[in-house]
Amino acid sequence: MFGNLRTLQLRAACGLWEDISHMTKDAQQSESLVRELFELAGISIGGSAPSDIVIHDSRFYQRLLRDASIGLGESYMDGWWDTQSLDGMIDKIMRANLKQKITGSWRLKILTAKALVLNLQSQSRSGKSVEAHYDIGNDLYTRMLDPRMVYTCGYWKNAKTLAEAQEAKLDLVCRKAGLQPGMRVLDLGCGWGGLAAFAAEKYGCSVVGVTLSKDQQALGKQLWKDLPVDLRLCDYRNVTGRFDRVLSVGMMEHVGPKNHREVMEVVHRSLVDDGVAVIHTIANNRSLRHGTPFIEKYIFPNAVAPSLAQLGKAIEGLFVLEDLQNIGPDYDPTLMAWWANFDRTYPEISSKYDQRFYRMWKFYLLAAAGASRSRDGQLFHLVLTKTGRKQPDCRFS
Image (tube, rainbow, N blue to C red):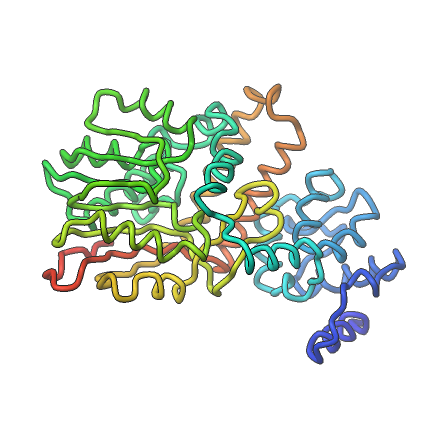
C-alpha cells in the first residue's frame, strides 16, 4: 500500500533525496502519495473525523509535495483545503513526523544558506522584522490579547481564563526574580508593557522597558501613563545603565542564533552583581539556524526559537543557571484562547484585514497550538545570577 512512500524513504536513508517534486510530476501519483502520507498520521482525505481534510483544489497535492510546510500553509490561505480541527490535524502531522518525510522546498534551502552567511537579526534588520509583525495594527492585538496586552505564553496551572493565565505568568516571573518595592527593573523586549506595568503596580518597582515597535510603545505609554514605567524605542544592544533585576519575556526567540550570546552579554552588563535575571522563551527541541518558511514569510521574519543547547552556550561563563522550568504545554491553551478572541471579533476589523489574512492568521495560531500540543516546541523559564551570588529563592510553580 505504501510502495511510493517507502521508495522515497529509502532514497532519503541512502542520501539520494532529490526535490520530491521531480518524482511527483504526475497529478495522480502526487495524490496517491499525499494520501499515503496523511494515512500515516491518521488523517483521511474526505473523512468525517474533525482532523480529517477536505480538498477543494486538486492542485493541492503537487503543491504540498513541492513546497512542504509553506505549501500547506499557503494553499490553506488560498482556500484549497479545509478541516474542522486545524490544530488537531497539525498535532497529528507533527506526531507522525511528516515534516521530515516531505522535504526539498527550495525556500528552506534558501533560508538555510542565508542563515549560515548572514546575521538575519543584526541591528539594521531587527527593526524591519519587528515592524512586519508587531506594527500591523493595535486594533487586531487589543481584540486578540488579554487586558494587559501580554503576547506570550500564559500559565494555566490554576487559571480558567486567558486574563487569569497571563496574570499568573506575570506573577510567576516576578516571584522568580524576587522583586521588591523600590527595585529598578529592566524589561528587554517589553512589547506593550504588560509585564513592566504589572511589576510596577503589584511589586512597587520602577521599570524601563525597551521595544522596537512604535505601535507597541505608543499604546503602552497610553495604557500605563500613571505608573513608574518608561517604555523606550530602543534596540536591546543600546541599553545603558545598571538594574537590580533584568527580565526578558518573549524576546530570545526573535534575536536569532548569531545573537544569543550578545543578548546574554547585555543582560550581564545591565545587572548589578547581586541581581537576578529571568528569561522566558519559546524553545526548540533541536538547534536550528532558521525558522520554518511559512513563519519566516508571513508571521515572524528571521525568528528562530533557541534550543536548550544554544541557551546553555549563550550563558556559559556569564551566569549561574539557578532554575529551569518548562511550561511548554501551557502554550496550547494560550494560542487557542487567542484564536477564539480573534475569530469572535474578526467581523469588527474585517474591512482592514481581508479573508486571506483571516485564513493566514488562523493557520498561524492553530498550527502553533497543534505543534505545541505535540510537544514539538517548549517554553523555558531560566533564572540566572552572576557567579558568587547566594542562591536566590526562585523555585516557584
